[in-house]
Image: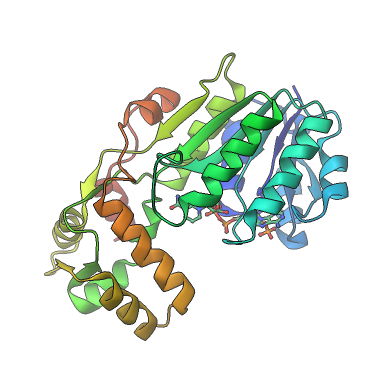
Length: 282
Ligand SMILES: NC(=O)c1ccc[n+]([C@@H]2O[C@H](COP(=O)([O-])OP(=O)(O)OC[C@H]3O[C@@H](n4cnc5c(N)ncnc54)[C@H](OP(=O)(O)O)[C@@H]3O)[C@@H](O)[C@H]2O)c1
């Protein structure tokens, strides 16, 4: 079977390529796509085929999808510019006769109000309208969004957020990637997977960091504008700080909460827990 992974030069996409290889897919059946030449060369070293594409360049996508049976379509990273890029991917998949387009979306994309969900919802709608057979891999938050900031939590003795007591079903990129590989290879993938691990609140995140490190860390809930100011003060660019604060508000409304069953089902085991991920990062 001819499989294509877009965004393979990124963190999730590369993990999906290695998950496909680990599942026994022959390397020459995998075509890994991305823009960054250096990271494409790194993928080629795994034995897979590589090709440079830009979602903004329709001709590059047409060339990459010729003969492709199944495509793992990793959403682009240029928030705000993604819809026209994603439309190019969808149209190229349609014209190339792709038989399964597996799109990495966001939790509850059809109903969530957080800003990040809008492009995912519109992309899902465009995929449905295209008639290309599809599966939506609606990923919740990455656990790495938290574990990558352990040093900051320890420095301040605090996890700062605007999520109230909302719960997030975060899971590791590696688990989402393995699940994506399973869905891509499934005989009859579901139309929608709501993917996430065991849910936790940010107070539990703080308590877990405290337990794993033996240091005092508590959750400090602040209004969203205050969170934006604190993030900007810590060097986060204003637009991204606003996206993060908006995501916390969505988290507070339960929009990044999902039943862990879909992810566990694709993995054939429970997802990596918050405690294990924090311990590994600590
Ligand atoms: N669930 C979450 O918590 C969460 C958090 C962050 C992001 N996301 C979403 O999940 C996606 C994957 O996450 P990640 O951590 O793997 O992100 P990442 O490491 O930034 O990787 C993004 C990938 O998308 C590719 N890409 C972006 N724009 C492109 C374009 N115009 N044409 C072709 N390729 C393009 C990048 O290619 P090059 O690097 O080669 O340019 C890279 O391979 C992100 O793109 C974003 O949509 C989700």
